[in-house]
Length: 481
Image (cartoon, rainbow, N blue to C red; front, side, top):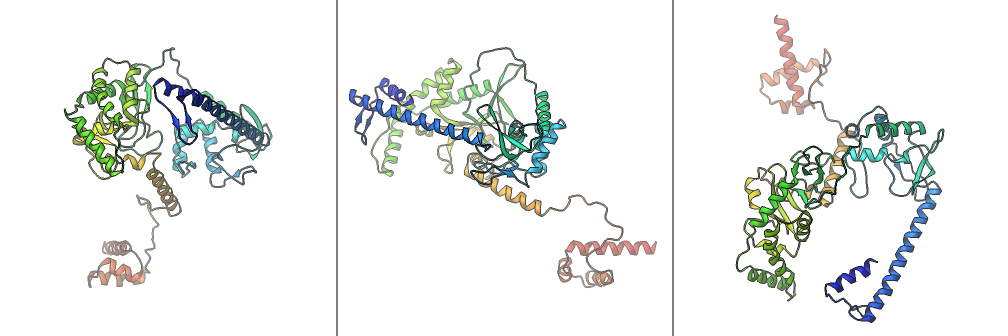
């Protein structure tokens, strides 16, 4: 059990655990017995809850009801009734299937759905653009397929079992078989030799400074190099660097090693840290010193000395010990480290280092002066805290997506004018009767009235007045010729 394993780790580390509310002292045999009994009951209730939850989901599936969020193209009609077609999303769902039956790739399908104005929806992220991953996942969802040939009801799957659903099917049984057949024919798995699992030192810890997304680890089949790739472009998330750049893993490793070696603590760093701790404790009404900060400072010189000779697994342990997840921010264009976000135990130590700056807007984010000097995008909109506005897990990003969705809906209901004019009718209607055109020309040419004043008097735009003047001038030129 996880509880007993955790207490065993504490015991091996010679760390005592005392519960004041339950009056349990784990350092005594009685306390160990009480905690073991409590942990056993907790595990029993957790397993029984999982069992009853699985049983309830199985009964819903057997009744033809879907478990989970309603898929794209449908809308809910109640917790105990099957979903129905969403008239706004169903055409997009049909478009997705028909494009795949025509042989279009997932990226092409996503682009066409986005161009048509369709958006995915979820409780967590709200309305978002379609991506190739979204399209691929939808093409695997058997919920849309008819349960059997000639059946008009969909399919519900639970634990590898198929049940006849109560909801209407989006695709016939034959159409779904064709979709799956084409999808499988388009999938070509790379034949790679068996090799050991690669260790990425910064997997889950390196991010793009401009979009805030964690970089994806990948290898190259030909060069055998390991890379970190930005996925903003494939996920349709804005990024000022196009969102598809890569950085070699060995370059990132060397850059971080150079950063560690450049972190030189002053001789009186312990006194500086102690003063900072006392000041923070006084502000918070506490008077305790955290010895973890002193220990963290003593670890830094050893990390810098061992970084080059350590194994990938040991270097990864150093990264996990020192940085927050996603806390190594990289500039993918300049190929340099832009900022770091250390763990709380290392933050006071790294604040006193030369070459880093902490922003008041984002406490705990240390920006390197080297990147700050070379950064071409020094502006409020693209500052080192810009990632807060486009991080998928941030509140500002969700608010921004909501505003973009509202703006898109407004433009769809109020289409903008074409950028390029097309040839109009031979005798266009300019909004003002032709018998009033001489008066318009007289007021502009003779009385020198502004176009906007005259346009307001006739209830038209100033561009209409300008076109009338050009048309009159053109007619006079034809008559003189």
